Image (cartoon, one colour):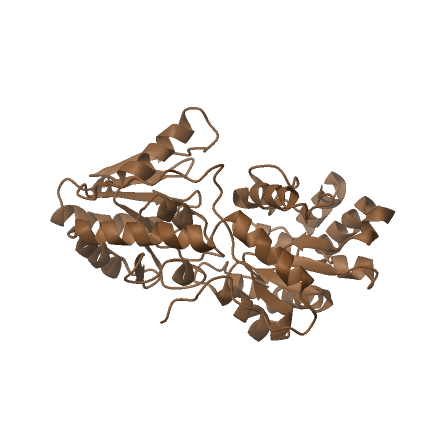
Length: 390
């Protein structure tokens, strides 16, 4: 089950859940694990009333209040109830996220699982957390999620970092939470390029939410990079609109939003992944982040924030580097050091591709899902892939 305006309404829509939904459910079906899938949303009139009840002149605060409102989440749960058919109880249920409370509907008649890239506690704790939420709104939101988590048979996470959050922030027993990882959202694995060159100081950034992904810090850092490497180019992909101040424009190429399935945008994005020497995403908050994995499978070393799942997927010194959140000076230093050493970039690129193929494909993720569902209750969880030493 998938649902809400936050993550999407249609399981096989390539835009739902940042593109993850399509690949995840498709792989579940390919493995014979999927009975059926559906999505839900609250009816328009009821949704309008709930939006009005959470109104704020700050649109981001308004949006956050609305999605945290237990009344909205209960209304979504009721929509799930309307979709459930009698024969569904012969199977296990799996809900994406905790926007609704399916365990309450099942009342023990069938096992119920969930799959997550993040949770409310981590979102509220991040530097990008929305300001102005009242203690009552926060407490109600966290209490709702905790109730859902404790009613589930098992919780599946995309990272060990997130698994630990469920244990520490929501008091979920460790054996009930399993890190199964996540995969790359590509139709096929790109061919390896044995002679890929890294002597061009070309950097790639991909992210629709430019501010949250640390885009402004990257532009500040790139200004210093450009002073060291006058031919350096920063390619920005993702934002549908972006106005860059004149002083930060030299060397920056803004490509806009490129859709992988688009006959023009798809090949252009693939060419950037082939041609660039380094991928950068210094996020201010990142529930998981598929883009670095897709860069790594294209043999691009990655520079990412030293937090969340990012610090697991990118192995510091082996497949890329980590930077402190919001530190433009450190980011510039790391970029300059890496761009000055093409041979090191080549080694990191090869290691990154191996790591993705070993651990971060949807085939491997769904195999872990199957094994975790079949495991006896009380068995301790095993991380989806080795967590790099700190």
